[in-house]
Length: 128
Image (cartoon, one colour):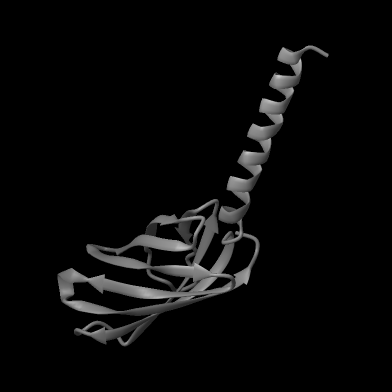
């Protein structure tokens, strides 16, 4: 086996291992999550419950029976950092925080109505 062939194999193996190492941490947050948002200030309802799915850092809203339509956009980083926009009708909530294992927490703000609060999340399933 020539030096060039060994180098190409080593480079390919190295890139494969790096790709696997980078993908694994992001996947640990994948699954379905129950989220409770509690209002600390403002005239918004006292709390809101949502179900979301995370797949490779992308977040989507899981609408349940009787739920008003909403959309969730943003990302969950491989380190668990959460940065999301939640929209229902013309209202836009900004949410930040962190997921750690099977739980998470953070803060949210609905500037349009002067509301803000905190959120807590619990992982329900590893399948999104």
